[in-house]
Amino acid sequence: MRWAALLLLALPLSAEDADPAKRLGDADAAVRAEAARELGQLGGKASGAIPALETALGDPDREVRRAAAWALERIRPPERATDPASLGTQGKAFADEANALYNKWVLEDDKFTDDELDKLIDLLRKASECYGRAAELDESPTYTAPINRLAKRTGNAMLERDRRRFARRQAERRAQPSPEKPPEQAPPAERPAEKPAEKPAPPAAPEDLLARIRGARGAERLAAAEDAGKRGAAAAPALAEALSGEDRSAHAGVALALFRTGESRDAALFTLVSLLDEEAGPELRLEAVQALGAIGPSAAPAVAGLLVALKDKDARVRLAAAMTLGRIGPGAKRASRALGDALRDGDAEVRRQAAAALGEVGPAAAGGVPALLRGIGSDAEMTRLCVQALGMIGPETKTIMPALEEQLKSANKDVREAAIRAVGNMGAEAKRAVPGLLNVVVVEQHEELRKAATDALVSLGEEAVPDTAKALKDGRAPMRLAACSILERIGPEAGKAATALAATLKDKVPEVRAAAASATGALGAEGRPAVSAVAALLKDPEWKVRLAAAQALGGIGPEAKGALKNLVAALADEEAEVRAAAATALGRMGAAAKSAAPALEALKSDPDEAVRKAAETALATH
Image (cartoon, rainbow, N blue to C red; front, side):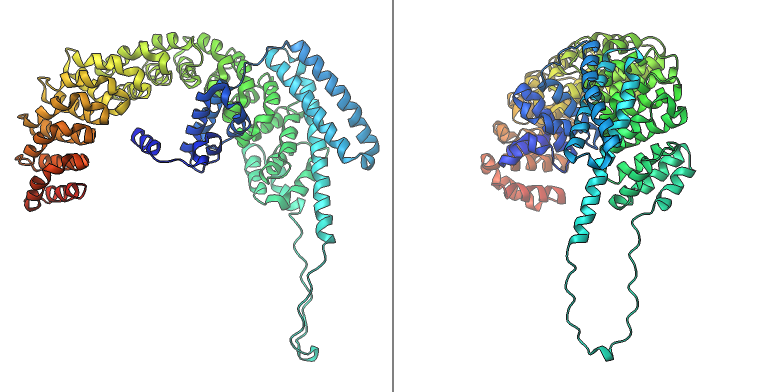
């Protein structure tokens, strides 16, 4: 992966490729994620990319969503803290204005203009936004009823706006002149009698779409809704009409189906939020939350309603709400404090799911960090989830690292593994934990934990290099071997370890010498300070060490031209693999190894086919 990135950097970039904001729309998820990270590194200078990054919070790829959230945390100015009472007052002002306009709509109906309808929706959304922010800061249920009432009215208004738009489109289609018929090709008398034209099938009749949804319950109803949504835009009018009925028992499924058609998506979301009130009953509230969970990251506009659901009387609804917020991911940033509060829930499953959800929200969930830190130590599983979530939130919060270091010593294997993986996400903050991770690589009895520690050190990259280089002098051969392996995987970023690796090339243990050579080769041009020491290994008594040395010189490339004579001598090595590796290394030196051409020509008659091919390839580069 690192070599691929370096290769891409070496290629000329078009103006579009050079603009990370444009690459957020790339078809490759890895490219989108890297573009988001680049924007985050620019900080406030990338403020123009905020809308694109906000869109990326709904990306189907989890890593893209996490990278976008991390970038937004670094780009956006800190939000000003506003007390819930002020937000509530502001929300009430918008709601009062909206309610007056809503009542006018109810009374006048057809006389209510499109402009008035747009204004109504704007006011309702502003009121919902204020109440949602107030609910984020206030643990009391003060804002529950206003949020639900506004959601219902917003959904109704949006459905009316979409209904009008659909009716206009239908009228425009009917008003278009029919295409002229081509002239008849035969006299009327000779033509066979025409069959009556078949009437086109009606667009997705309600009984066809709604029967399964109304007749099912729970997961079956949601599955039926998904199937209904596959009918597409043609099904939207019937589904929207069904949402205007008084019987709300199937509204969760109908709203999900409407969302899946691609039409009236906002109206569907606000309808689902409106079903979270007490009058809907626990089963319908549960279905509504589960429907929002099925929608996933695109359900971010429903977060205010889900804050209400996190305080529901029914533990099943609270559990589903926490799970849904996790599926929304970074778009559920505003739920961070409420999810942190849910870590004190009376139901153990709700507590655990809230911890997992905070991790899925990622870097944007800094508001939940204090609660996660308090959750460590309650029980092994809860501790594991809290540690895992802290690692996913990452290094933006400075208080995380001490807690992770403590859990590296946990008696519970799963907690230790979570802590190891979390440390690997902490960047520069994890520098002080490197010696502990190196020790885990050597002494931990569980192989998966040793691998996790190795992966964590590689993830830390340059931050792990100084202490890993020191470990090359450790008295334990397994530690020296592990250090070489880690530096090799880090690659060119470990260039500062070249001198330490040069000394390790003289290690008394052959396996360590070979590993040190491989690590030096992985440094690429950064391995230049160790070239003479690597070249000396071409005379090592162990053939595998000689092989590693030849391969390392090939990895260093033209910067290894000082080893030219040693490599030419290695073309006569008794081991075919060493001869082939030496030929390949000379080929990678390019024109700098032109004087080796006669020796490479001689290898064309080598008894080993791999050696002959390596020689021919090398000669082609000179």
